[in-house]
Each structure stands twice: as C-alpha cells, then as structure tokens.
Length: 211
Image 1 (spheres, rainbow, N blue to C red):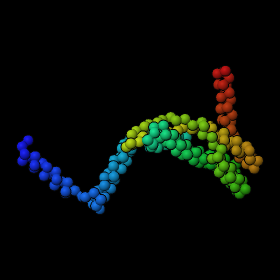
Image 2 (image 1 turned 90 degrees about the vertical axis):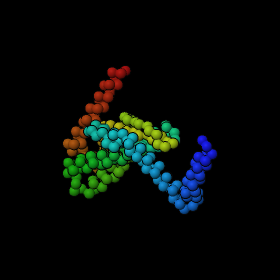
Image 3 (image 1 turned 45 degrees about the vertical axis):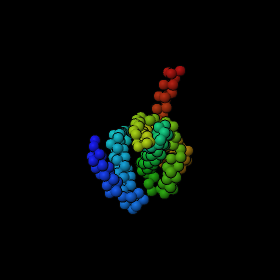
Image 4 (image 1 turned 180 degrees about the vertical axis):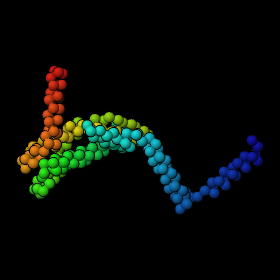
C-alpha cells in the first residue's frame, strides 16, 4: 500500500471519529442509552422466541393443577430454584381458588346460602386453606434452560394432584362443627369424600403389595 493511500485511510478514520458525539456530551449519553434499549429489546425478543409452549399454555385436566415459572440467574441451579419458587406461589394461589370454589359448591347444594353464620364460617375456613396446603406433593414435569445475556433463564412447569388438595378441604370441613351438618349433607361432598377414601384404600393396597 502506497503512502498516499494510507494517508487517505487515516484521514477517513479521523473524520469518522470526529463526526461522532464526544464522550460525556448529551448526544453521546443519548446514543449510549439507545444502544442499551436496543440490547434490552433483543433480550426480550430472544426470551419470547425461546418461550416453551407449555409455559404459555399450561396443560389443563381434571386430575391436576399446573403452574409455570421462570427466573434468571448467573447460576444455573439458582435460576431453576427461583423459577420453582415462583411457580409454587402461583400453584398455591390456584389451589386456594379451586378449594374456595369447591366449598361454595358444597354450601350451595346443601342449602346454606341463606345462613349468614355458615357463610361467614365458610369464608374463614377457605381463607385458612392456603396455609394448610402442603406443596410437597408437586412434581416438575417440564424444564428448559436458555441463555439470557450473561445469565441463565430457567422455565419450569409444576404439577400438583388435585386429590391432595381435596383431602385438605375435607379435613378442614370435618374439623369445623358448624360446617359439618351443612356441608357433609351435600351429595357433592359425599362423592368427594368417597373418592378420597377409595384413593387411600388403593394406596394402602399398593403399599402392601410393595412390602
């Protein structure tokens, strides 16, 4: 490369440097912020592109409750743990809603709708159900890990069998003398209690076979 060509290239680079905003100037600060916004937009787009179908549309069946969760961390295991924790919070809320709906169904069928004392007691019982929900029976049915900049993003899907939640509801009703006479008389409650007893007997038979 001859000397004149080299000078031309250096001159062009100098002009390009001079044409850009000076570091520390308002224009330079604005350009840096714009670059950050572009990086964030790309990160969001990548997250949406990597979104598992089971996260956007969790399964739905009559035997289980499902809850998805997601979180990020620079540590892979911690990202999964945070995602599971978020999913468990959602799972507990959904279980509580399910049990509250079931309780109202029992009261409606047993004709307790006009009894304000029973309704008030029902609200107290259902509001306490969430504290009685033991999520130890959940299972992680799906999980996925994707890169998110310099972090890991974890997606998880938890499944919780409805039978466990139903047992909690039945036990709560059986502990409350005011509700026993009203709710236990309903056919829906009797059917539910029978299903739970059958499930327990089945579990006992399975345990005996394993021994």
